[in-house]
Length: 578
Image 1 (tube, rainbow, N blue to C red):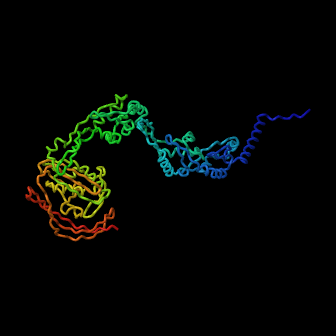
Image 2: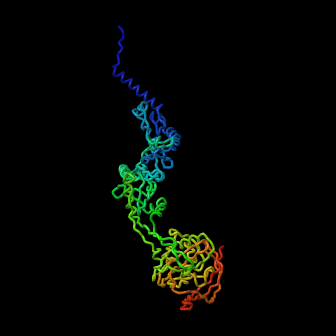
Image 3: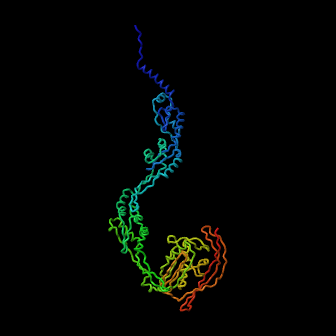
């Protein structure tokens, strides 16, 4: 009989095979597997199957280059870059390896490592908070976006719409975490340039604080439709005293704005002063409307004759101009865009008919002062003469040079020039006006009119008559006289580059007025002093002295009275400028 072979139960065989398979796989896992599961990567660097030491070395080498790649970020709709190193961001290699590695030597862990794929592991990131905040604050300076309200502008006679735009301010505190997360996820720009077009889609949006515009696009469109476009549709024509003045769209637009009101609506604002002063308006306006012009008075010998007739003036206010222009800007058609400006007629003070009645019949006096030419003298003397010429002083009135000429500022048409301050030449606005004051003082002196306020220069200036000269200073010293002649006095003033002449017209109260100068007394020698460090003016020496001038009045060839005018001059020290 053949031998029976005892069969092994299938379960036992299977169990034996399984026992042998697990042992083999475990042995294979222990011999061939590393600390890191296959397919594991950190920041895109494959470290699968490596030991901890090998993985750490590979990450350290690879991530040093990856860590220098810029992070692409967005603030609002602006795209920028952040250098991770400057932002204090780096990968903690050892902790990242610890996170990626499996632990334990049990069969399940070891054998499972042969079949698992670790995937991409997020690295452990070290963050220097101070550096991160500093880098983000620097980024905010160039990438924060200011809110922009919707607006309307006027350019070359056309209305233009400015679209509103939200404002974005980087929230630095919240952005540190977002930057860390972006770095950990590997969101870098590489070698590409971050632009709104190419990188905005992959950029990390950083937390921001948004500010919405107060003037919306809808409000902007309404303002253009209802006002701005009609305003620029055609010129406007103004009527002043029966005469027409046309203003173009371009000129109107130069002085027209649309500003938001408290309710957030754009409303038109017209700069009437600017419009009135615009050469395109001011020049034709001067021919249409302006101040009244007195009759031109000339001399035939010493007798006053009327040359050109007076002219009635047309006066209107800025308010009246604005009131006429604004309603026209929303209308269409030439006829509808024509309006009248409310004006007021102004009468001239002196006319052909009233000149004789005022007593303006003869020359009372005239005086001329010559001076060395200088640009500042030409400007300042010419401006003062322009303001003084044509002054009419009625009987009993007091005339003031400071009130008539005004403060000597650049806005009033004056420039810096040489004046005397603390006994020394220096620079100040209005230098040279004292020449006009001296000329006017001598004219009123010989016209026999009553001085109310005047003062001489602190030291004597050779081009002026001793004891018969005057200076002025805004706010402290004026030249004033009272018209005690019984008739009106008219002041004519003229200037050239080297002289100024002031003439008084009216009716003489005395046949003649003369000046008698006494000798110099109390003579004092000058000293010497250094000049100012800034704007130094050299000064030649001259003695100081006292002098008395007698004003003598004559009637029918006989002296009727005399008045003494005493003047004290300090020495004029030598001043040198080193």
